Image (cartoon, rainbow, N blue to C red; front, side, top):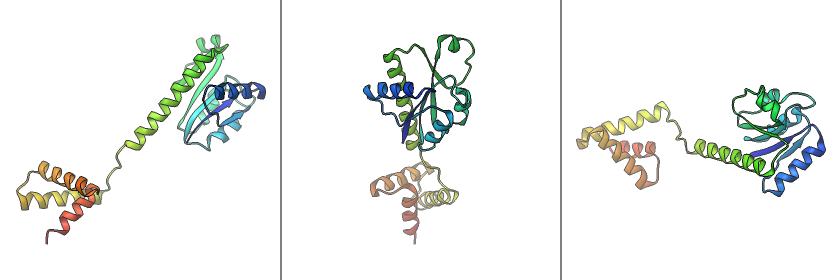
Length: 182
């Protein structure tokens, strides 16, 4: 689950920012006035965005960025002068003050889409097979190659087809082939 956390030193500004985002369809998970509060809030989420000002009562944005959990991105709101003269942070999105609402909403939406894309990529990434599972598949392929005079590629495709036809994974298909050898 991802969250948008607003961290601004003045609680009224933070609440107003939350309301602005909410009116534009962006759900805000938390509103904070210190970096420590933001870090505590971020711990409740796998990923998200921290929207913050340059200087908080207890730390600078750079310290907050350093302490955020790995899945979090930061959107820094600062003066144009600050952004142009001295920000050299990798992976930091910035918007200059005064804010333009359409730029803010567009940037936050884009950042949320990137987080969603990364989450989908992680889910789609195939699981690594254990050494034992790899050995089992290799044995099944060797058996098919010896018994049915297949090439390794043909044996592999045969296992894949068995796997898909039976609705099982490759390891289970290999186990079925090995059980039938007797």
